[in-house]
Length: 427
Image (spheres, rainbow, N blue to C red):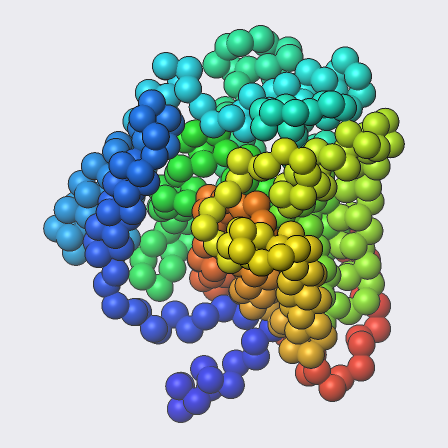
C-alpha cells in the first residue's frame, strides 16, 4: 500500500524523489574514473599550461579520494570529498596563483573592465588576435573591476571573483533549498548539504574552470540559484537571478524560457510574467546601453566571434559535430547555425507539447538544449560540459535536501485551465 501511495504522489514543482531508492555504490569507481580523466587532460595539454598542472594534480587527488571512499562504510562521505577537493582544487589553485598562471579569459575580463571605465564599452573596436576579443556580455566585466581598483594583486584577480561568485550563488541555492527543513538536511544516501557542496566543487567539470579561471562557474551557479528560488516559490527572485546570469553570458539565456514555462504551468500566468519581467528587465538594462555605445564592436565580439563566424578563428574549438560540419560541409558555418536554431525551436516546442512540471524536469530539459547547442556550435569547448553536468546533478540534490520542507502546490493537469492569478508574495 505504501508503494502504491508513493507512486501516486503528485509530481508538482515541489515534488521530491522517492527517498527509499538507495541506489548502488558508485563513489569510489567514479572517483577512479575522474582520476583517469584528469590524467588524460593533463597529459594531453601543452606543457607549462594551467590545464597540465590541474590534470596531474587532480589525478592524484581523485586517486587518493577513491581509496578513502573505498575504505569508508558511508557512500559519498565527507572525508573522501575533502581529499578530492584538496587534490583537484585547493592545491592546483594555490600553485597556479603563486606562479601567476591563469586561463586567458581572466585577462580578457580584466581588460574589458578597464575598457569599460575608459570608453564606456568593454569591447575592443578593432580586434585582430584572439586575446583582443571579448565574447562575453557586459555584465561579465564586473569580475574585472577589482583589478582596476586594486591593481595586480591577489584580491584584484578576476579568477578569485569568479570563484566567489560561483560559491555565493550555489551556497545561496543551498540555503534556499534548505529553508523550512530546520537543519542542514541530508539526501537518502546520508549526504548533507555542506558535503554535497564539497562534492560539487570537487567535480572535474567544476574544479577545472574554478582552478584555471573559467568564466562559466558563476553563470551556472546563478542558474542553479534561479532554479532553487523557483522550487521554493519565489518567482521574482528567480527572475532576478536569471537576469544577472543573462547579463554575463549567452549560455544563460536558454534558462529564461525554461523557467518561465515551468512557472506558467505550475504557478500560472502572473508568477511567470513576474519572473520574465525580472530576467528580461535586468538583462536589457545591462546589455543594451553598452551595446549602443559601439554597436559594431559589440556585434563583432559578442555575436560573430563566439559562433566562429568572424574573420578571426575562435580559440574555442573541439572535435564536436559543429566543428566537423564547418570543416567538411560546404557553407558549413551557415549549416551549423541553422541546426542550432532548429534545435532551439525543437526544445522550445517541447515545452509546449510536453510541459515541465518540476525543477528537475526543467533542469533536464535545459541540459538537453545546451548539449545540442554545445555539440552543434562551430566554436565550442569541452569545458562547456559544466552546464549539462551541473544541471543534471545539482537540482536533484537540492530537491532531495528539501524533502522535509512544507510541500508546495502541485502542478495542474495539462488539460486544466490556467489558475487565477495568486495574491502577490513578497520576495
